[in-house]
Amino acid sequence: MRWADLDTLDHVNNVVYVEYAAEIRALLETDGLVPADAGIGRIAVRFVRPLLLTREPVVVVSTVDGDVLTQQICLDGDDGRTLHAEVVTTYGESAPARRRVDVPTLASTVRRTDLDGTGIVRHPRVFELFQEARILTISSRLSRLSPGSFVIGSSTVDFRSPIAWRPQAYTAGAWVDRIGRASFDIRAELSDGDTVLASSTTTLVGFDLAAQSSRPFGDDERAQLEGLIPA
Image (cartoon, rainbow, N blue to C red; front, side, top):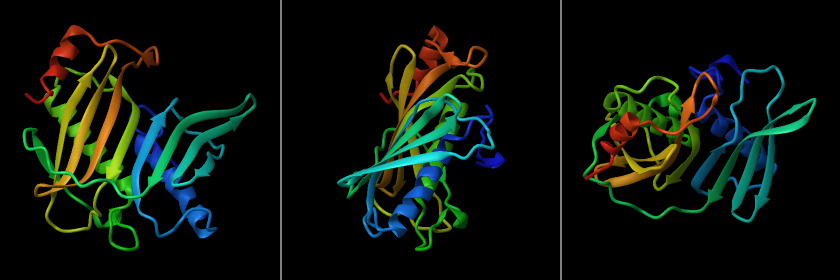
């Protein structure tokens, strides 16, 4: 774990869990335990509890079942092993999709440091591109919400086509798809023209920063979130 892994709440950033899983997945590929040349169709992350900065090593427990690799991100302590997140990687192809045209969009720029050795954007960096689109959408359109109002409960990315580096930005679109009592879903797409390269569904949970616990939405928050649902 590194200082740079932390977010503004002093928790390990959501994208970093995908990095931890990818690091171990590469070792499994080297040992021939998972296929090195198989495409990844989906990565789903379930966040169980925040992971704070520690000198203790992060433990990744990996289980392979056919085309599915399940990795538990844990810490070992005096009371035993504590689960902080679970990353499930599914090998195979995701179905093609066409871009949704009735949602606001913004530019999404790929950096050369986002690329793997083949010149394609690495899977954790795709999660980061979606994170940026999500944060920009929330911060620009939900102006009365304070930092720390939400935490991520889960996030899933479907990889539909490789994303290569280019000087021109791609298109990112994000919108609210579901609103519950204390959580809501944001769906997002990264597109090239009308073709979706990757899509994402992320569940955000209302969070009480002082109490460090979940909370229901207020009427004002709900009204703002409803404004992000496409007509």
